Image (cartoon, rainbow, N blue to C red; front, side):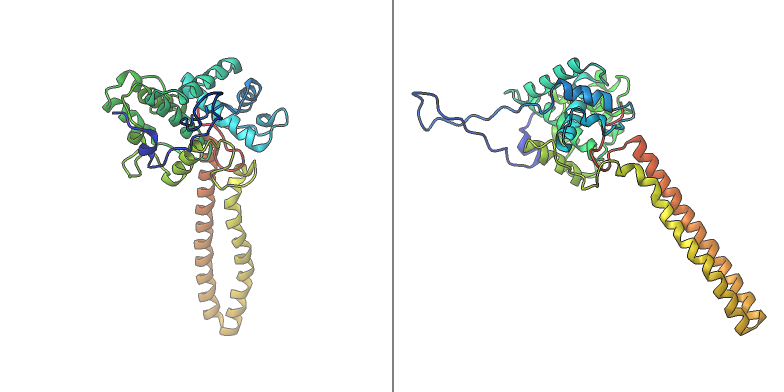
Length: 306
């Protein structure tokens, strides 16, 4: 059931960092891989707890407490959220969350492939969610059931809430019941909804990069403006109002019959345009509502729902 991470994700392994040979050691000794270390300390994880609410919204001023730059703030979100996967729920204790993050990196650096895969999955999931990606949580729950892990599948929140569902999948990977390829295999049947974004999340975690933006979105706070998109569509109505006079003028030159015809035709066009703009506005509002419920677009992104 267990496969190595590079082959699972179709990637080559990260290049190993070399250390100078110890005194008396052979010059051609095999290089050792450098251990990965967390970016966030206890203060950074406290900033994460203070900044994130149960819906996954992030207060982007609080997450940058202490003057943290954008990259460090994003790493706090990624590591804090991944630590909550270890815990299986939201944390209000920065020391407890720090212990969970330390456990995540301990397993990431271990020689146990299942543990390495589970920790990598947690970081990839956190990176993916922070960039606006979503899993099919129902499919993730089905994976647990099919793998004989009803003990995890039947836990509260699994199949519904992000933290609990992703936590359960990681535990199944850690225990050898699931493989990384069960979650993501570049097919329509896997549980990942945005393959391209997921691959970016994998690449960034494999390279040790938790700080860069992988969603190609704008500056912090941009997601909050999504609802305004529909208003832009309404600008067309102003032009239609001006055109009403043109239709009347055309009728004067062609007689009352023509004027009546044009007026009726334009009224129908106005109604069509208004209905279209109304539909566009409704869609924008729906998109905005989705962003508020799962706000991982733009700026520093967010953390998934608890």
